[in-house]
Amino acid sequence: MTLKPLSDRVVIKMIEAEETTASGIILTGSAKEKPQVAEVLAVGPGGIVDGKEVEMQVKVGDKVITSKYSGTEVKIDGEDLIVVRQNDILAVVE
Image (tube, rainbow, N blue to C red; front, side):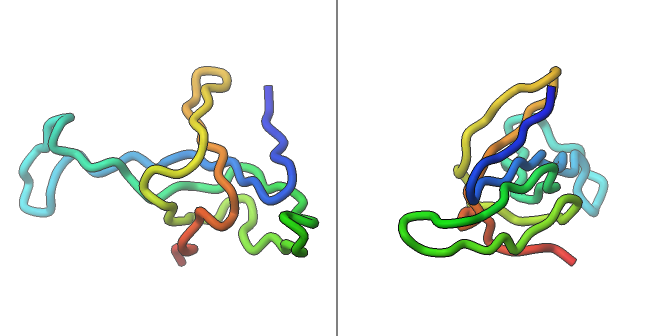
């Protein structure tokens, strides 16, 4: 099954956080922060949102930084995905 986002929505998959620090310390599950870097898997068409024209600025394959607690979490074919609005994406990582 695939997700096809509507309007200004974007489907992302969070990139796993490092489990070891730069100095070699292994982090436990409770010590890890929720990752904020994600990969874009699907992008909606844009269009008119709240009376304003929205042009999509991200594309499939981009690495992005999102707001910490944004979006709706869904599980598709055993994968944890998040559907966010484009304005919840803070930056594109290059």
